[in-house]
Image (tube, rainbow, N blue to C red; front, side, top):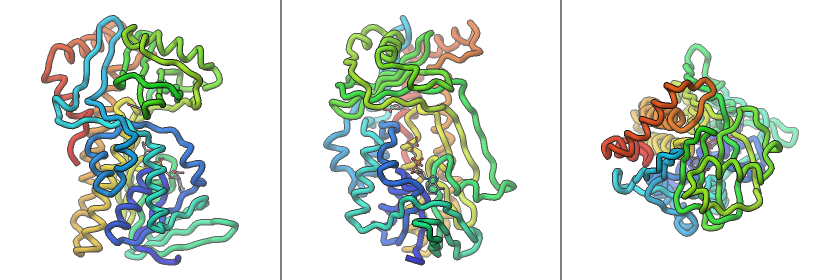
Length: 390
Ligand code: APR
Ligand code: PHB
């Protein structure tokens, strides 16, 4: 393999989904992934799909297991200490349900689809480097099994996540970045227990908590924690006690606890890199942007980036049109910033910040009460949480 149409850096959801869709359009590609497949598949990530993402996966033949195992729900609950709760009803206000289906499962489905199609995925590709990105013939090099490899291509898709090499290949005088780091993290656990009926985002003076789902016998729970918290400081009993203390009793009573099968701490940040393209390099997914998980937008943004980029590359190869490639960054960023704003707003609303004053706490409470009293306010939140159409 020394030539391909598109070299895709990164074998996570963005890279694999792009590889799969390009294959369906007859565009040859290769995925270069730094880690082993086993390592990629062990990553635990969010699991809430917007309807647009669900439809996209169905449209490209990846809906069978998702529709069998995924949990469809009409939105998520917001619960507030001593103030009750409300349903962000995405069906009522946006006409679109949500689907709980883990990113790990999606990645498994993508790997299986690429394997069935004989897709070229190079794992443990070390020292990936991008070359001649502003020429019509960029090329990519990497090391594997002690040997240097090279592939010549026409386009490079940077799907290598926040810590990848692609974004760093854009010259510093071209790239603009925007970032907000939050003064807390999320401690998450997975347990083989039945989840609550709905996703529940809870605000409490003690901190934020979230009850989520993976399948009828797999649950995901989070609590806000210190940025430098260590999972080892949180034995299961301590986690469950704190989680239930933050949930209103109507939900805390329904929680089925059990031993954690995974426990990890994730930092929270908002980040956007502009532009999302440079010469023949196009960024997609976490390589270009990060959202705090409060809005469950990370995977859905990766999907919408891939929707725009695969459509643009298909137009180039099938119709000789480059207008969609030229508009890619502007088109994708419009949706990225919408998700960044929603995720930031929900994070500000639901978490306790170290520098909070009584004024901040009253403002937050009034925001929640306004959502409970105003259908228009709730409809605005629901249409953004559901995800605006691609
Ligand atoms: N060379 C090759 N591969 C790399 C490199 C590199 N230099 N750097 C990173 N990678 C790989 C990582 O090992 C990872 O498998 O790129 C992949 C990037 O995958 P993700 O980080 O999952 O990003 P993305 O595919 O955009 O998916 C976004 O994943 O992190 C979550 O919350 C995020 O749900 C969102 C989704
Ligand atoms: C998850 O299920 O992991 C999850 C759900 C909703 C979020 C974030 C994470 O907002």
